[in-house]
Length: 449
Image (cartoon, rainbow, N blue to C red; front, side, top):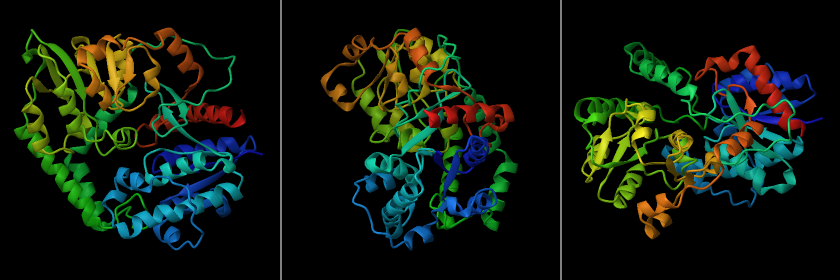
């Protein structure tokens, strides 16, 4: 009898609950790791209490289990966690250190074979690293996540950079296809959420929730202990948004010099796992822009495109610094990315889908973080060492290697599954019954191998 564990994570929890219900029909027992008390109380009504590990701050910090000697890079975990990095050091480091033996005992004593979770919060990454460091646990951490293109498919990632996909046994019902460039469907949904964020109604609701302390849980390690911290962050976002709208001028595509070749760099929203976790050590995006600019040949211009969902995250000084760089332009954030790809020579990003799209267009693309689409021809991981040792034109001349479209497509389709892997808030379609059945079939496939 297989035993698996899900890590509760806000709206993603709703999806995991439905999948767990389906897996139960096949004799698979589900366990849970839960950081939020409200979700802990909810899960207690659906699953046996002895299958739940509640990891609230007080519960973990009061634990007297002997600490393990695994080196899981605690400093790195704290630094990359959007909440813990703002919290007092008096508890944040001790929390992660005491969490290790709790995880170890929970997985070991319950003979858990798989842990399924996100790779966003420090406690999730800690669980992932522990399963890798403790071979005796015989447990694998898998991150079910969209493969972005084609739409409506997801895979189980085995590393915290989402660069390695768990390869499955050959499935007879798989119809391979050559992947064509398309815009990920989550972008349209994301645009709707952005429009909602700036409405008066939405912001009044946030103010109301802050005053009444709605949904606040000071014992949750993913929420700020001091409510003023959240308030300061929100006020800063509003101020940055105002300054951006009124004092940052962006360049239109038709205003660019006609006699220059174009290099494109797309910014990530930050804080976000795609930059702070996957892009670890390349999270300073102003440094990235500056260093790309340093190797920019004469006759080229650098376009920097802001992420539409990140407006409000960065200061006015950030944009002014970029615009001071010779032959560098802050392109309109509303500009169609595919139109920009057709115009540019090459693309730089930390881990963005733009590199995947570029490679499908036969455009040279570079990522600073490892990604699964680095397997694709024209899309390669790059580092500062490459910048030191090579010119930009030399780098571009030597990057047309990797799998062709057909071979890459066959590999990706064979090792991914149909289904919308999202959360009930970000994409409500994922909660529809037919989608839950698809997701559950995929989970069952990897568990049963």
